[in-house]
Image (cartoon, rainbow, N blue to C red; front, side):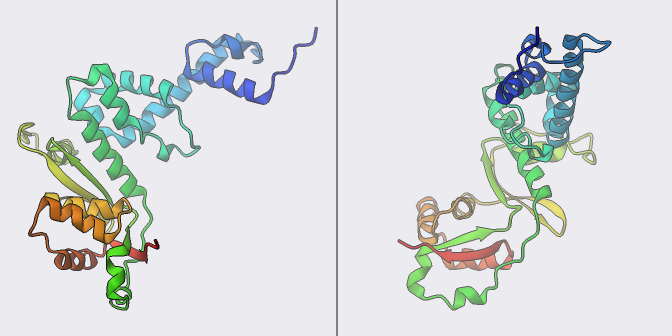
Length: 263
């Protein structure tokens, strides 16, 4: 009797479950084993998928791996891969949700700083992959009417991101680089940090900012208009100087475009 051919979507789902789960039986009936049993053949592919994805995560999160050791990282990665398989074909895009996963992963609860270190590593990874963009021509701002200024939206250079943490994650990251001194010790009670991450002249730069400057830039980066971002910063620091901050953004060539938000 001829075996019925499943719908493509059903077959794809069965193969996915076989490679990322523990039960290959649903897909085994549609696999030609030849000299090898279908279940065994699927196990080989399952191992290859897990190994490849774990290696991709290790490459993106080397500090996290070093902090928890290779065996624990492999254990966490296996759980993550099963729950969050890739949704894009390019492996360089895989791992964005690992920080949130680690925050909820019970075995990591004793290491409260770990998700923020992972967030930083992902930001560094994104910065390294980002394409270069030309900085804003400052004459565009000078030609804009004054009444439009509160409604300006700023577009940042693609490598830029902002992270804040109650932990000294920049020092943790630096102390776990290959060229770090073996004597480097990080005091976890040494205070948090407000970070700006970007590439500059081909290098990834981690820069600690003051709280109000960080909040201002982060608000702009997330799409707030200039007036609203300024209100956020002024609420944190009444001495926040908007003119100085705009000039500094332009000097650092971190802004690539501006637009007026229309009502």
